Amino acid sequence: INSANTDFRRARNSFVDNKAQFLDLKTRLENCDSDSSVCESLRSRILIKGDEYVFNSVEMKINYLTRIRERIATAPELEDDDVQDMVLAIDDDIDELMELRELLGDVENQDRLREIANNLRGVWTGSRARGYYYGMILYSNRADSIVDRALYLERRIDGALAELQEAGIDVSEIGLDDDVEMFSQEIEFARLKIEEANGKLRSVENLEGDYLRENSYDARLDLLEAKDHLKEGTRILGDVLSDIRDYGIELENPEEGLEDQIYEVIEIVEESEENEE
Image 1: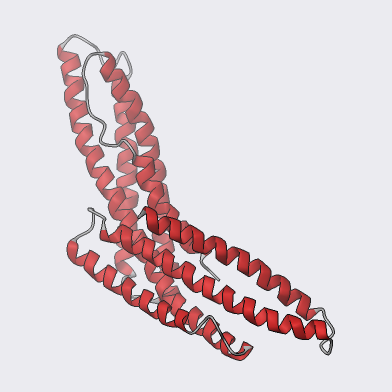
Image 2: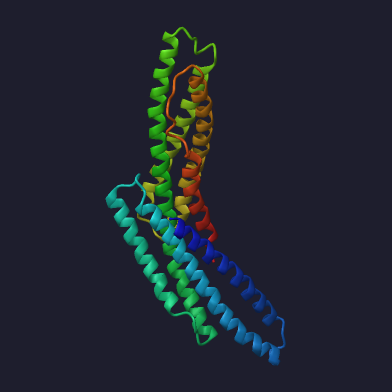
């Protein structure tokens, strides 16, 4: 996964650089005298730079899908059959992009380059939507598994509070029961939002292209709300565990790294929105 991250960032940086150079040449060509030698030189240069620009765009998209693929293939939260279906679909999309990449590198004229770029847009409409949708499924399942672990820990905390009560410590007096209640509420709010998102994702699974992506976006909003509740729940959890430890009871924290896990998937989703070119 780290290698895929590096490849994607490298491809994106190259794409951004080439896009800026291409647009600069395009502007200069639009403002030059069409019969001048300078204008003729710009036409030659813009074809070369346009070729590089489209090539980098394809590379970036391949690397973006590769990142999604690797995360899905190694996600313990997903069922094996689902992983296989998603990986096969992404492989098909990557193959299509690779076929287009083979056409680049020495494009003979602007019309041919424009044709390849149009084909790329058509392929990317479907593959981007699937990548976005699969990212939402991965995000949802990962958040769901975090909620499950939080509910398990909640039961452990209830047991710890019972131990404190038996030892003569009034947990309501020191505010622990209020903190645990707030933690429980945040986790429940997150669970409900994830449930809403899952319902929306199930309802759009047969859509394609922009329809799939646009309708998946509604689920993303629910998942972002769930993320906020999980973050707040984790913050409260840290305080609760610290207070419990102060009284000599040690509980492991299975939510360590929660923010890294959540943002790891959000990063991919947000980067998919940058891949509009």
